[in-house]
Amino acid sequence: MKSTLTTILLIYIIFCLLLFVLQRKFIYFPQPSAAVRGITEISFTTDGVQLSGWVVNEGQPKALIYYGGNAERIENNIAFFEAVLSNYSVYLIPYRGYGNSTGTPSEAYLYHDALYIFDRVKVNHEQISLMGRSLGSGVATYVAVLTGRWKNCYWSLPLIAS
Image (cartoon, rainbow, N blue to C red; front, side, top):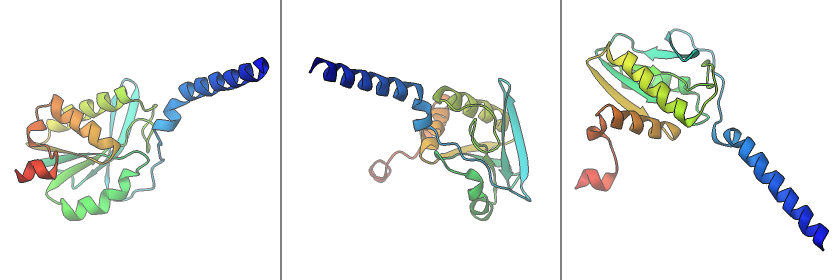
């Protein structure tokens, strides 16, 4: 009986250690980029990591920075942004380890890189909007709060209706 409990406890401890060591594999699901032609490529380098993505409708006075969802190939949104937001330059920059960007994703780096890109993009545009999907909604909210753009955030339908 004692050896059975010891074995169960040992298996449980090993399982918990594996979960701890492999936790990032259960949080982030980076996808490689698909081939994209005819769209301006852009890259930013921060802390020795290259963040590579695309600018849709380049050269517009207004900009939108899009923060994608986990396991999302953000380049699949290019046609949508070309058609719907033709008066905005739309920045689609995959997170570290996603798409063609180097590095390894982490919560701290998602926020760091988002602020870094925001600071680089804002110098070329008179107005910047932020948009996030799924994982990216948290990143967009973080950037909005730290840059003072939170006042115009969409929070909920009942709040907007009141």
